[in-house]
Image 1 (cartoon, rainbow, N blue to C red):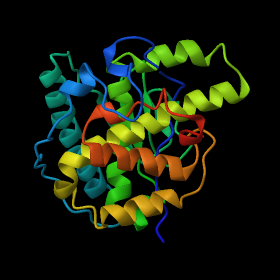
Image 2: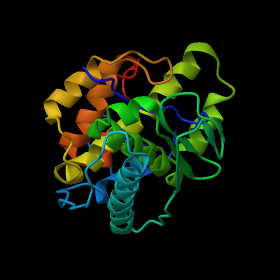
Image 3: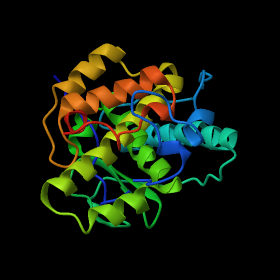
Image 4: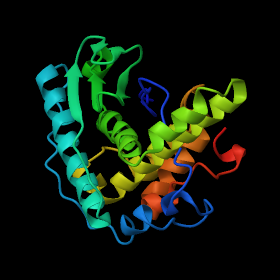
Length: 250
């Protein structure tokens, strides 16, 4: 089985919105406000995402840039529908380990909140086996963190994270990452056909479920649950990880 990039590491601990209608309801129902306006029947978004040629750095960069344009169109549309300000993040793509917010210590990508930048690293493994859904998820998950930044989630989670310790910090990290996974699922609900992932959705979610566990991101079965929830719900209102039970974010 190909190595799965389930959720790329974030550059820094970041964000929970403590108040406001968008985050106030129980996790079993869509939230109102931002999430309600961004919800409903998602129109299919047709994006021009090119094929990938193994071993060719320029081809992988073209794929990531096309994915970035697709994610930007999707989220700009959702924010506009909600009457909220949206700004496009910077996207940097490298084959090295340096980024605008420090060294990339893992495969995939990370989000740099202060710089509002998604930094993507193309590894030797990516060049040897450029599995499209892995590559797509580098962008989709990190764009989820950008959405958290724009909606105040990152700043508010940081206010809780830094004075906490031990298990409390771990759970805050998991809630953050699983919400980004859910936002990625919402994005896929409108764009998966364009991405041409080379894997059926059910097979992808099963593979995510069986991936290696990460202390930062939590149990793979929960990451799979939230990504699938966003995909099937098609709205950010299904992504309230902040009031979910511990067993759903452990």
